[in-house]
Every structure is written in structure tokens, then in C-alpha cells.
Image (tube, rainbow, N blue to C red; front, side, top):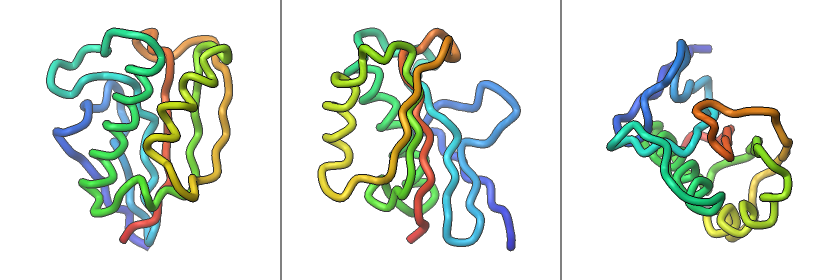
Length: 127
């Protein structure tokens, strides 16, 4: 099975030695996205809602570059700096997955890159 690197300028550049996403067969494996604005390269200001929205917009851009979308997501992992943000993150998350959301794990972590409050990774089906 071949491995294809996915890249788009509509999502932040990788801040380390990794790809934005990799396609293998019918699956797209997205690297975790943090709330970095791809236009400025800076962390978006604001609370968990603004950061969650930017993360999911970044993931949507990566999946679009792969020829698919968030609606084809089968599994997500959410990394939160503070589990007290769970309900507020969840409210924004549900806007992006209104029907039949993917399977999901959510964990609290000690720290995230650039001191973000949230990071999300996705596995999706290719179209």
C-alpha cells in the first residue's frame, strides 16, 4: 500500500518533522492541529471556543486538500490543557459534527505546543 503526503497552505505549516496528513489506502491520518492561524502563523487569541474553532477549521482544510471532509471522519482525539474546558470545547465541536459524529477520545494533557488550550487529530475516510 502506498503512502501519500498531504499538504496545504490553508492550514499551518508543520512546526516539526511531520506531515500535515498522510493518506494510506482509503484512510487519511491527520496530524494534531493546534489553533494556529495559517495566515499569520500565530496562535489565535481568545478562549477555548475560538481555539477549538480554529483547530477544526485547520483540520477541515487539511482534509479538503486530501479530497475529503470532516463529514468522513471516523475517529478524533482531543487533547485539552484543562478538562474544565470540556463542555465549552464540546459545544463548538458539535457545530462541526452535527450528525453522526466520529468516535472520539478526550484527554487532559500537561502542556501543548505554543501553550495552546486544545489540539485535535483526525482519522478520516478518503472519498
